[in-house]
Length: 225
Image 1 (spheres, rainbow, N blue to C red):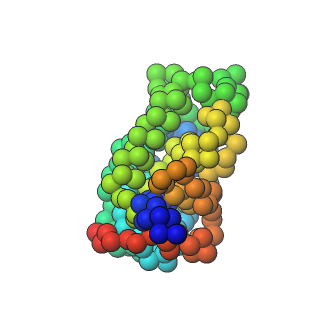
Image 2 (tube, one colour):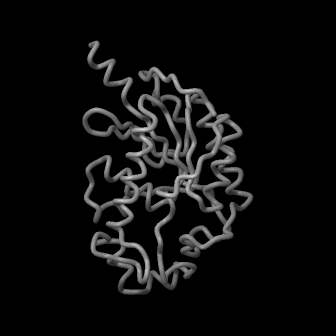
């Protein structure tokens, strides 16, 4: 039993948060284009997810993609958790290249769209990033954060595809199947990393997560910043 307790102390719980709704959510593929902010609905969503994370009472650090919609979501979370927002570029949205800013209704008519949905491991966005590159980038960023916050609970505000891939990696799901996972705006997906395989505690949660016992076996010594 003592050994199990030591292992628990070393585990890092990562709360992956998709940013709140924007005026173009579900209509446009914004990618990394600057200047896209949360809508009123998105601001309300961000406040609610902030309340949920604040209720945990043990969040030690808060990271965000550098894009405005993610930063604004993280700022709302910060008000409830008292954690200062730190930018982590490794969890930024995919670089959609020439598809950036295009209407989703138009993109869905392209033959390449089915490749994105069914065989993403073989696809690179025109003049942009490939799914495999995004997978490697996200894995590297999360590994760095996990090593930095051993035995702590942290939150990372990112985007739908990076979170899908992170959850898929934790579950051992092949890259070509990750598009089957829905990641809603302002949802929480929670993964515990440590000795042995990751443990996925929640996926696309839009309700109270306190019952998951996040961090109850962890002896968190980090202070909130």
